[in-house]
Image (cartoon, helix red, strand yellow):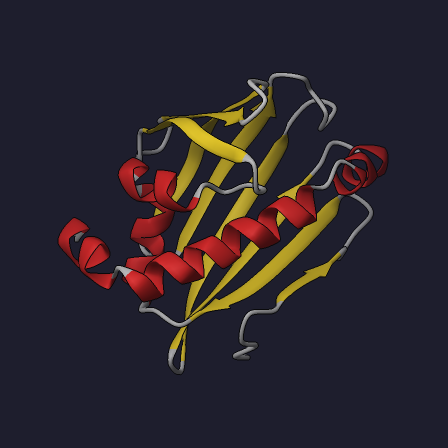
Amino acid sequence: MQTGNEMMVTTPSPREIEVKRFFAAPRDLVFLAWTKPELVKRWNFGPDGWSLATCEIDLRAGGAIRYVWKHQDGATMEMRGAFREIAAPERLVHTENFDDNWTSGGTVVTTRFAEDPGGTIVTTLILFTSEQARDAARGFGMEKGMARGFERLAEVLEADRAAFEAAR
């Protein structure tokens, strides 16, 4: 399925968005990039103009997640959640609730990391509380922010493999 730098987005059901992206790096390194706070902060999970000021990840079932993004104009956005399932390095399931509740009650996110020739395919399935919540997230710019974050992740994986290898 290698797709270069493309991020593929589908809506498999009225309440879901599925995002797929190929990364030219081994699965265990991509998983680390997704789960180690010092590495996540380097690629940021979000659009340009925002930095990840706080990144807390307690990687265990029931463990908390907390991200606080800060915009260059001083605005902030916070997301909290908890891990429901961890099967390293194949799968993560967690909840997400944003401070301004733009997802109308939160989401359940399942991320799969599949080995592929030459790298890893990451598939993220986001389950919303309703079709309206899903559509609101799409209108809020979620896909654009994810695409830019994934581009930065690919750049960081390419440019600084040593930092990821050291995090193993």
